[in-house]
Image (tube, protein in one colour):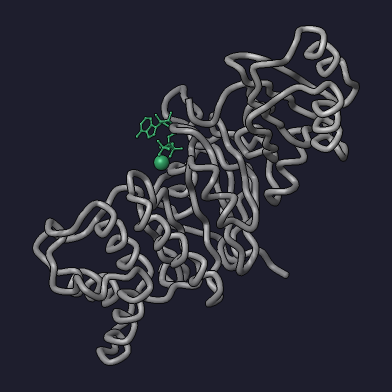
Length: 312
Ligand SMILES: Nc1ncnc2c1ncn2[C@@H]1O[C@H](COP(=O)(O)OP(=O)(O)OP(=O)(O)O)[C@@H](O)[C@H]1O
Ligand SMILES: [Mg+2]
């Protein structure tokens, strides 16, 4: 099967800064690919280069099997873009904004009416059709921005951080809408610096930092890179030094800390860590309030690969 997007050795320089540094990746038909990276890692620059909106220093981009160029209108017609910055007309209503953007591609009025209704329904703006952008909350405005980008039913969609500074209700609505678009057959490139979103939404993830790919794969493949099985936290005031030393010295323990009445143990890959720990607490008659286990997150992967948190 031919990939929908092929990026080869993409490099974009701003004077001495390599905003994107020798990036190569593919996007397969029907997947949601997540580009995950901290602020300034090069996500928007990558997208803008793929779309031929920015000139790049080196590399090649193919979309739908054809070379992407600034005047490749037959390719661009099949693409929907939702930019990081909201870009709608202040003087047009919700409905008329979507009508305008959809009308750039869909000339048939009857079909367009249906497409606009579909877009409004997808983002849940049914009750706001006649509202002006300035009358919308931040979350609703983001939803309008998305509706404008996808109303013409593109088969390839780019969304650049569509949930930044959005309330939880709008965020859930946006994430559900994106899944619906994928289920309807669209291929989606989604950038974010929220790892939770990537875990919920994306079929495959590329982690980027300083314009370079650090790792890519499914969520599970990436989490395997964290090289840890789980992190167990126990709230207790009663652990003695020799007991802590014993737990810390166990061969499958990567790291252990005991601070502020919290024992945290990070285990390397293996089984039965939690049950072993519970048995030990019972046998030693150590009282504790809560004990819980967490699986590695993409933040643990990022920490492992870069030595820093995804969100500093
Ligand atoms: N027009 C420009 N001129 C000079 N440097 C730029 C320009 N645009 C972006 N950069 C730099 O390129 C790097 C990548 O920026 P980019 O906007 O692609 O990051 P990003 O991952 O999208 O970040 P964010 O999460 O903040 O949106 C940053 O160091 C940024 O400062
Ligand atoms: Mg950006």
